[in-house]
Length: 159
Image (cartoon, rainbow, N blue to C red; front, side, top):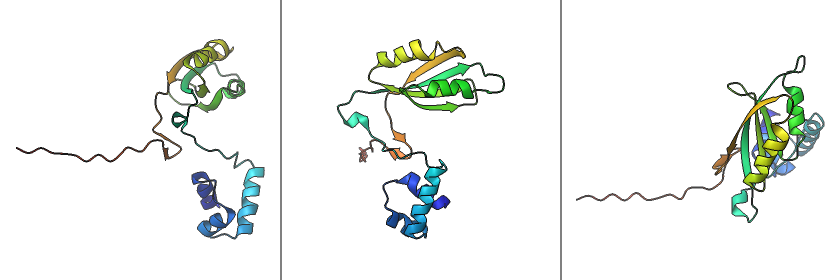
């Protein structure tokens, strides 16, 4: 069944027939397994990865390093839950190293992201510091390359 999950993660648009053929299961087994994975929240959802730079939509994505004070008996979970409730927040990760949480957010402009950090994130009671990094260009996400580089012929000049 791990094979089925890997196939779905690689391309969730595959049909049950294609998944059955590729995994060695029957279509009925594939359908039942997917239903079970969804019920058990092993599969949380299905998403398209869009290269918004190829559209006319303006968007800014930022990675924010967040330092927090963990709470007794709850660790970082309570503050992470408060943070991921905001619509702007795409992802929240607990980290090892020099900061505690990574928060990925998107907005329409640099100002919108800055206002989120200054007015919503930084003032949270348990947040002790933030550092915001704006993503300038995406090259690869979830194993997908955003813009393949054209193969350039090297030209050598010999004299």
